[in-house]
Length: 178
Figure (cartoon, rainbow, N blue to C red):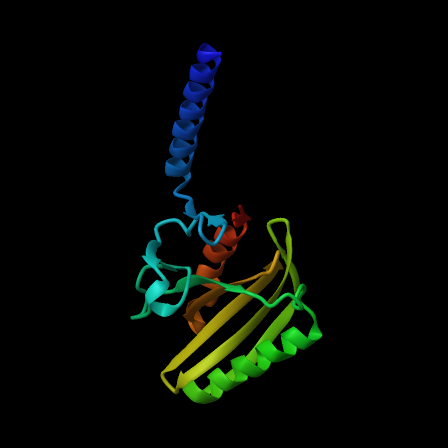
């Protein structure tokens, strides 16, 4: 019995070590407390999102004085909210419009249902005009899973949005709920 226990413990340690090597090779970001993992865009800096009430932030290289970024927020939902529906989308858009009014103006570009890895989601793309010299484009993607609302926000200068969008999409495709 003791030999079996030692063997199982040894195998567990080997598996943990192998798993850590795998994570190091992929640079996977894992948040065990919030229960998700994702591979950040290649070459982007991983920053603690807690000072901004976010789970994590990924910051890209400075381009024309602005650093494109991708952040993840995870919110626990009340039990009655179990799916992304028209009411929730309407509320999100009202909140986005309020942000747009506060910072300048907001123009919706597109929206629709989409998948993120194996999860059903929804996305909204919009332009935020802060002033005449600063126009940002953002894509927000939303998933609800087991009482949690995952919000992924990608932001770049409007003129550079298409340049950095593939990095965001590639990273988003690696998202997993643990």
